[in-house]
Image 1: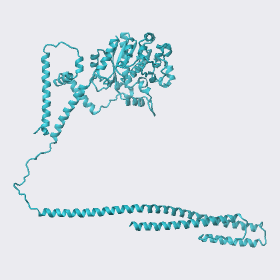
Image 2: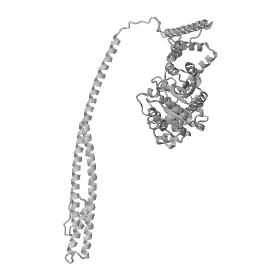
Image 3: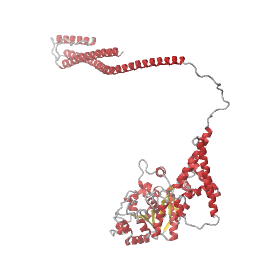
Image 4: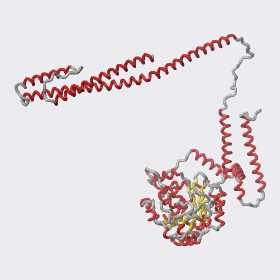
Length: 607
């Protein structure tokens, strides 16, 4: 019991404390005796009667007896000799040796007593801890015993109730008679309908998927294919920049280019991708864009180019910077001018100071040649010599930053000094690329578009609606700007069959390391490609279901329908249109009937 355990623990605790006190007292006596022996060894030799202490052991007693004898012999010799006699000195040595042995023996006893004290101290601590825990264990035991008694009483009560129920059931009289015996049916009643339920679920899921896809396609106001862009804006697509996740860019810089190992990758590495990763997919797409722009410029005699986008966040500054680098890499004397006097970023991309720059030139504080940044200025910035020497041609690139941000950017760009500046740099360079603000939020790009030789509009696929892109193009047309074409940015290869050449970029972009590699395609992407291929082939073969689906989508695209040009209706077109309407009605009736049948099957429409 807890009481007996508590009493036994308390008894052991008292005994341990007594032993601990006795051991401590014994150790003090022995230590005092050791001090006396040490003092005796230092004092002049005189006759002693011995050293005594309780429980010092037989060894110490024999040594003590021997010491007394040696002192007695020494006293006899002193009757005939003085203290300097060899015999007296020999006796002194023996006395010191015996005293040392006695001290060593007592020290051993002290060590044993210290160990005994430590053992008893630990035992006392354990006993006290155990003694402190016992009351809590007693309370816990009482609680458990009380709970046990309660459960026993409950069990007894329930057992009595059960017996009473059995007695009551035995007293009841049978009031039910068998009219007809129950027989086992020949076939199952309400058998499991796993296959039927799975089929119904598949059909419902397919219908819901088609409806959701139809809704998303109807709500999508972006432009999907190159033909759509060219037909919608009336200008060619000059290049395509594929969509690559930032993680892929960083992986390319680290694994293939060996940059940024052991730390974060600087922003300039990911921004200046054509310089730091010239074999990457993005760099290859920029070189393809450069080729298209270069031949178009040679054909139309264009030297000053303005790159802009409809809204912010479409990646125009990154595209312009990399395009300028690709022009410099082929030996063209290139000037990159940051005309974005509201949120300039070119200086940050190259790691150089923003001032002085274009605004200082237009205000007359500097000549434009004094603000040109060359490769020497880049080396004095954040770019190192090793980084600049990664690819050739960097010395062909000059940069003019934005300078101080003025309170009136539009007036500065619309000034006569700006026109003169454009003429001067046009005569000094092979290619001049201007980075400016987006077209719709500010008028800077529209004003500058009327002053340069050509304008290229960047469109990030899926970023904005087609109406915003159309307004940006219309603003440029109003100021008689020469819009050369469109560049599609952030294009995913799975969007359309028009972009399958993107795969060639990935095949050839990494040199020998990527030779012969085949990109693994996920299973869901393969399914998407198969469905897309089905609709593409159906469209080529004139399948009525595909044509009907396209007619339904085109009907609900009100914006596109409103912007389509009005054409004269050809003979027989009215009849064909009514035929399409009949097919649409039949398809709608079929879907409604199918849904009604499913609801009837699930007993939702049954009364």
